[in-house]
Structure formats: structure tokens, C-alpha cells
Image (cartoon, rainbow, N blue to C red; front, side, top):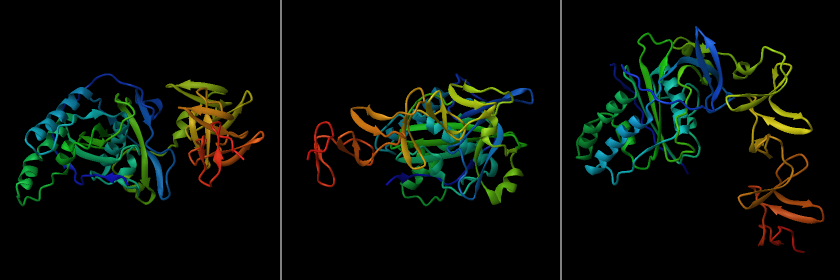
Length: 378
């Protein structure tokens, strides 16, 4: 059972500076296009296809470049202060999360439209977060200055929080400060977005909190951008009145204007074209099968397609036969489908758990013994 922790108000302060440092590659970067004499990044969200009742659209604006270390220092100073004053049990320094920063990209964009914490779609807020995080939280702010001003505003809730702990009756919102100092949150990502339709040119800042990270680098993709996200179909006209909306399908940004065919590498990702047409799904070339996601990106590792699991090698080619990973054996049949339950290879019967892992030197759930090679012992 995952515990979802969220604050539910939006701080609004108006006052201007942007921090900068190195930029890394964002794996949600679909394409970079030239617009109005400058490069504009097209970024996907946590989904590539809209869910029922929603449409997937882009919102134009600009992402400010964060100074990661300066931000972490500012937050950890607040967390250390809270620990020293006994407001939390212990001081746990927080670290950066690339995945949570990408969550903040989407949330900052969404909140810039309505200035409300709710998502633009019918989904709950937690759906924007990486599923690997067992607890999730966020803080939001709107100001002219950017990241550090937002942190300052969240810290300003401290006085009311302390008053409440001492038995005060203040009803002032303190949820963002509480999230900021919560030692269960060990990773953070922030994003600041300037909505292209905003006449005030303020930045909406989103802070996403969690307890897991696959990378601690900056996500990249800063500057002019079109951030895609889901919007409730019935609410699209309202969103259009508050944002510059792009309704072009993400895949179309990858379509070639030439007649190129074959493999093309872009931003570290591989795509396959046939006469300029970007292919998706299963593609067979040179006698091997490859799987391309809905944006045409070649996949590797274990992937689930139409309810079945496949393994794609580092080259992207579909694997068949026995495969060993981290000491565990898996079997992929002639169609590449990972086997589970009882299956026969040659003269021997084997049993694989629901995860695909081969049962060895044990008794299967239905009471049969298998030896060290996984073979059923009659």
C-alpha cells in the first residue's frame, strides 16, 4: 500500500532572477524544432497516449534552468534547522532525482494554466510521479524570481507550523513546509515554467518529493518548450483560453520530410523509417524483430506488449531461447514471448513463476520437484 502525501494549496507571490548551470539530455525530449528564430524542445509527459476522457496536447512556454546544488543547499539548510529545533526527529539531507524533476516539469506546466494544484486531466496528482516512489509529495509556488524565492515562501510557513505544534489555533496552510522538512522524503526535483500565454511573465514552480531515484543528474530540456500533458476533453476550450495549446500528435514531430529509410539515431535514441514514414510497434529488418514505442523509439530490455513480455537485446533485437539475468533464467519461445507456468523445451518440462523466473532445486507451487537445471524430476 503506497502512502500518498500531498499538500493542497498554491502559494502566490510576485517579485525576478534565473539560475543556470550545465544541461543534460532529457529522455522525454521528443524533438527540437525551430520556432520564431529559436530552438524549442518538445517534451512528452509520463504517458504517450491519452487515457479515456482525455486528450494529449502540448503547452507552450519556457523552462528555467535550475542550479541543482544551490537548490539542494537551500532545502537542506531548512531541513537541518528543523531537526536542530526538534521539529522533526532527525536531519536527513535530501538529494536530487532526475525522474522527480521530470514530474515537476509536467506539474509546473499544468499549474501554470489554472493556478490550482489539480491536474488538467481526470487523473489524480500522484499519477504524474514515478511509481518507484513509495511516498510522494509536492509544493507549488508562483513568483517572478524563480526557484529560491519559492523555497523562501515555503519556509515562511514555518511560523504557523510551530504555532500549531504548540497548541495554537491558526488555520493558515503549512503543508508545503511540512513536506519540505519531512525526513521520509529523501529525493527531490524542481521545475519552473513560464506559460507563453501569461501576460505577467511569472514562473510557476513545482517541487516533487519522493524516496527513490534512478539518477541524480539534471534532466535537461530547459529553455523554450512545448510540454505535453493530458487534458480533460470537455475542458480543452478552457485550457486554450489560458495557454498556447499545440494539438499536433507527438509522433508527427518525428516524421521525416525526406524519403529516408532505415535506422536513424537522434538524441541518443534509435528510430526506424520507411520512405520517410516513422514506424512504431513491431518492425522486422535483416531477419530480426525490433519493437518501437508509440514515439518510434527502439526499446531494449524486458518490454510488455499486448499482455506478453519480451526481451530485447542491447541492439534492440528480439531474443528467443534461454536468457540469464542476475543469476536467474528466463525462457523466451520462438515468438519471443516469455514463458510462465509449465512449458516444455526438448524432452524436459520446466516451471517458471509469474515473473518469468525459472524454478530450480525446489518444489513448484503445484507440488512437483524440479532439479538444479529447472527440469521436472519424475
